[in-house]
Length: 595
Ligand code: BES
Ligand code: ZN
Image 1 (cartoon, rainbow, N blue to C red):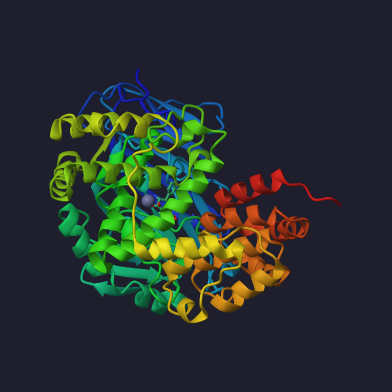
Image 2 (image 1 turned 60 degrees about the vertical axis):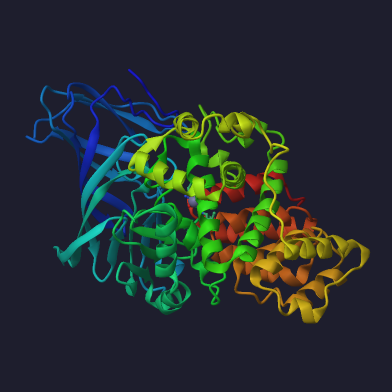
């Protein structure tokens, strides 16, 4: 018996599921998915027991492909893991069929009322399975060490459309005013990349292999914002090798989507906050696209190796950015990341183990361990490797790495063995052990220099001495330049200073949520009440955790802010995604309000 993932009951000595056949029906009144999943085994031994992950699922029947009932037991609920579903297999069983139903509060699903959508007419459902929420959508071996292909059939009420991170096989009429959508996912994926969304959706082609989906109210803006996607795919292919997933489609979700993007294969999920109107946030698309290689093709074995996904992808995202927009744009992106990294390292001072790249997460909820450290420290480690061997050799290494491990899930140790075989002695030379197994940043970490970055940083540092940028200069700053500047300003200012800043950069009216949030954090920390209404509007509309967290945190710094934070949360909390709600709640718990 060997469990190989601290976050899953998956046991690699048991029969291995290699394919799912799903038949699901979405009930928006009861907010449940119900139906049957057939788990199909590969050719190996199919006796003994099969342990599956489940969370918030009701299992009604378990049977074989011949209809023979199979004994099963649901274990006790574990806080992080959920409940183990143990099925006893009779000899020769080829498929385990499970009839089940999800719960309205299952962590991997968010059911939205019509009011929570842009169109306000129809409800919406979307999944977010990474890191370990697939188990609340279907019973499965919910570990990235296991991969499956799947077929799915989804019943949804007309006129709603279902999309999946898979290839569409067609649509037909179902009973009771419902439509049936069929999909096939031919490429083997880890369970966390399973994705389904249902809503009033419209698609627009961006190129022969790329289409964006969104609610009718946002489709035009989405097609405009992401019109450069094909150029990105081509740039990525020339850097990392052929695109192995046939299509790169995207879905713009309603604003409660808790992340900026999620790299669901063949259907990247995106927050509508990317629709800034000026393509200033397409780096998120580059990031999710880059995951098609780093993450989806070569996958972290478990959450303890998360940096292999995210660190490599941030590095890849910035290589794409550099190829398309030049050195200066890439240097600014590294500069923005540098500040985020420093703040995260500070925040984790009490939990330094979580700032190692290779983590140990037995008993730790991976959602709680999440931070930008694996992203930005990980990306800098990749750059350390790249700089040590030179770009040309490193580019060849990356293509080789993709080819060697495609459609496999690997550990940090496996990665290191591959590096050692490719470049003997390199890991020792750059002190990889410090990067991987020690907290914080090694002193030798790569730096990214750019005159522009220096200029913006020193300008921001001069703020406290009364130095202000020239209004003519400010007017020509790009969105990333503004972010660099805002990131480096003091968090607390006088009201006059806030008013000056807002006036000079027209911050409160911005459509770019990165800029807006940077500004609103300063305003909230400073107790600058003229901006509170904008904070309230953002926090009642947007559920992206990257914005929600720092805003509640900033509100916590003043008495007036704390009062408003509780008020906003009372109003907005019920509509948040469960992850966002939990994150906001834990911040609010840290500050009480005097009656
Ligand atoms: N895979 C992540 C999102 C994620 C991570 C979901 C962990 C659940 C658990 C995605 O690729 C991501 O990193 N998104 C970023 C985008 C950014 C780094 C460009 C985000 O959401 O902000
Ligand atoms: Zn990512």
